[in-house]
Amino acid sequence: MSQFVLLLHSDPSGWEKLSPEEMQKALEKFMAWMHKPFTVGGQRLAHDAGRVMRSSNGKLRATDGPYSESKEVLGGFYIIEAANYDEAVERTRDHPTLEYGGTVEVRQIWES
Image (cartoon, rainbow, N blue to C red; front, side, top):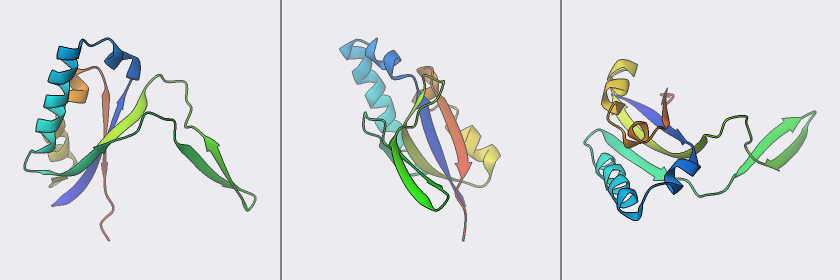
């Protein structure tokens, strides 16, 4: 089986609109998804912009970011196992991020 990373993108302002009961229900859905048999792991990311590191002309630079024109931010990730992209996409169809208006980017992890 190959491993795939699911990068969860969403607009954080959408989560602020949920009632405490709706938020609890959403969190329960995320936790249940974490325990699916093909899920290897995953984590929610902190509520900050992080840092972006770039090298230019031999100089390393770290800046606050990332910043883009989109309101979506990378909020977390999962690692799953699947035979190929088609199976990874099929297994991801019911991920709560999609239910709450977010985007899931599916990327295969390099096998060495």
